[in-house]
Length: 212
Image 1 (cartoon, rainbow, N blue to C red):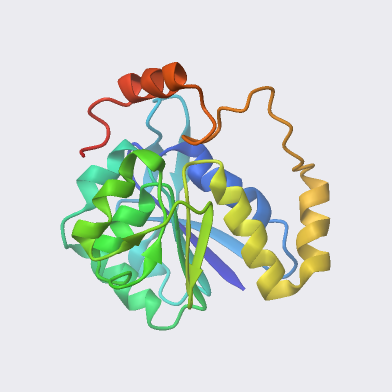
Image 2: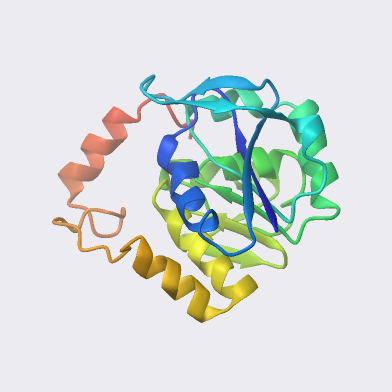
């Protein structure tokens, strides 16, 4: 099985590295990072770079395709080579997936039109204009399309797909290997549980990142 993870400049690291950690540990699975412009691709915090060796032309029929989010998402909303590639590989993929604001890119291709999907809470309001029904669920599956909410939700998406594709025992084994047993010290991981002042702080930090 081949899993293709799309990168572009100013991606959010955990959006893609969380799913990578799960998929790369599945048996008989190759994970390849792919980019429109191969080479060193740097994340949004300018502190992590991944050397992508595969171009879009090099990866033509992945079983699973995943695109993450990050501030660079806004530069990838116009129809072009990346959108063409996503539509092309979707014709043969088993799963077409996204994490965080990667869902906005996927939606802009038209592949999610008329479907429910999720993304980062700050970007949910943008989905209707793209023909998508927004969901507040952490992971949304509709047919062969799987979308995850913000950043860390990509791990949940990858484990969900691992269980679906290879069985619960395999997925649970990977979960144990990576010791994914979240016990956060705070209950502020969603807009429904975060105190009002924390929500306002987060909105200020993200000001300009998401357009309402």
